[in-house]
Length: 443
Ligand SMILES: NC(=O)c1ccc[n+]([C@@H]2O[C@H](COP(=O)([O-])OP(=O)(O)OC[C@H]3O[C@@H](n4cnc5c(N)ncnc54)[C@H](O)[C@@H]3O)[C@@H](O)[C@H]2O)c1
Image (cartoon, rainbow, N blue to C red; front, top):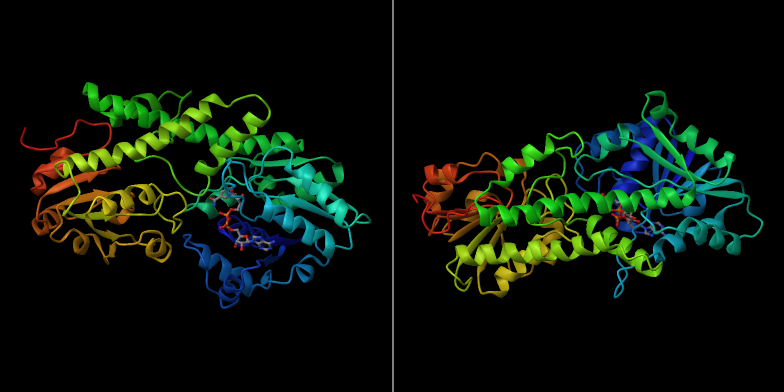
């Protein structure tokens, strides 16, 4: 199959590279000249483990190219995928469909033969029908179908998720479109990965329902964690005991500093908005959005308590600023709420992250970037573990503690324990959903 992929972000680039690895001919299009120049030089604009090698392999095989020229990319294409951003629209929480509709119109104006126009971006219910209207208005003669093909990959594990998905969801209106989509995903179908074929609206809804559910699961355990701290329970044990129940499952039950990232915050807001527009308020999702904001605020209180009531004049080392490990994505990361509160409270903040600096420098003004956790923690009054990168899981805690002015740790990912901290010489340790040892670890 010949496929054009519009948008070379986290989803478009991974999808394009993986489709080319299936054996399809892929042209990836982006309007950002910097990205296309980098890709043409063989450089990957984002950090995603394994993507550079897979991209190089398929470029070399002649199945994968990059361009800014959308018309050239869709010439002879069987399908064109729209994988552009759908950020939160300013002011009302709705998904901003400007980029999707602009791409649809560009495709329509450039197309001159039958193709399936597939929306991979996460879009509100009804958007694929609107895409069809936009295309029809811009090119009334064009023979085309639309299809909804939401993406479920996770940054940091994107290639595996794309190549070995739990399921592929395809929403179509015609058999002709279904056949094209079947052909595109044939390599997965042959390996028995389930393909769920639905109508357009159900496919669009599946994506929002899935993300809102996952955000709810995280937020639920974060709320339970807050209660655990008060009643003396340990949320790690609670998660384990809950997660062993097959009806619940152990994924997304790790308490932490609140969800962030490029999807959950915007998709929960968009679902809430869709509910309001249809007079069916998504009350659970609305509560999740509110509680998640409270979780982040609670983290700031926790850090302030560890600093003796004020950040002013304190030096604070922050390990990890990306919203999760194995990505350089900073969109809606909890660090963007927590770190400015430290800086604003008068702390000197020293930050380290294996991949976050490139994006993070502009987003976190007033912090000092350090090359590693040991440099960040030197002479600090508080160590904060904010993202659970593997690099932070086996630190020489005694070395860290020795270099600090005041030996206090806020482990917001529950990587360590109060015992680990005490053994390493820390005087205070707090984590999530376990009783804090804010003043005296020997107590
Ligand atoms: N990031 C994820 O983990 C993830 C997972 C599943 C679904 N999604 C969804 O996929 C969509 C894309 O997300 P992303 O994180 O890849 O976004 P992104 O912001 O990383 O990338 C979007 C790209 O599209 C390009 N673009 C925009 N308009 C264009 C046009 N008219 N022509 C050519 N290029 C254009 C931009 O320059 C940018 O490079 C969103 O709807 C998102 O919700 C994202």
